Length: 248
Image (cartoon, rainbow, N blue to C red; front, side, top):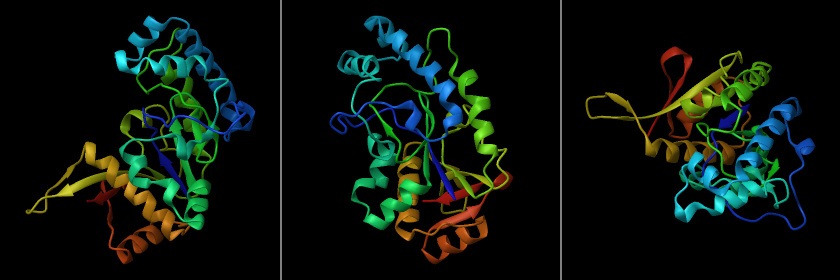
């Protein structure tokens, strides 16, 4: 089972002493060329503080992000699962997982980064700032990633739970994977009407992934996943077009 998460714009500082980005050490090695292209464009943009601040919509209190991008090849690294912060990752709270649950998360979680493409949860990465809609000089993130990531996901024959935002799906659809399910987080009104959530969908996704990690069950198919959810008191149902709905 592969659990596919979006990244977060916010990142934790620091990393292992003496470490630095090693592109050759990252998972999904077929994406190496695209990673080098995106990193080169990011560093080119970072050569001008004002230009990068404008391109990434950074305010005066966020200018430290420019330095992060300038130092992306030399700054210390930590596992991707620990690097990202924000609502989803705070709800997942990977650092507090028991050893067995953390091992499960490191094995089964993949994060879709605008800079690095697909990352295994254990992949060591530096802090950086780049979003799906960021504009890099002479490089379109959609052209860099869409076909390459879609091709990687199409090779998956296991169960793929796609918890990304629609914006990141545009940077690499998972529809080519034969057993891929896009998960939407919804609320249910008194009359049974369901509606998609915005901010709170991230919290729901993080808590769902934490529950998956704590259970540490590698579900072979969606039927197994749905049975586990029902037994665990999680309201998970098949939705439209073969997707899944998580009711919170």
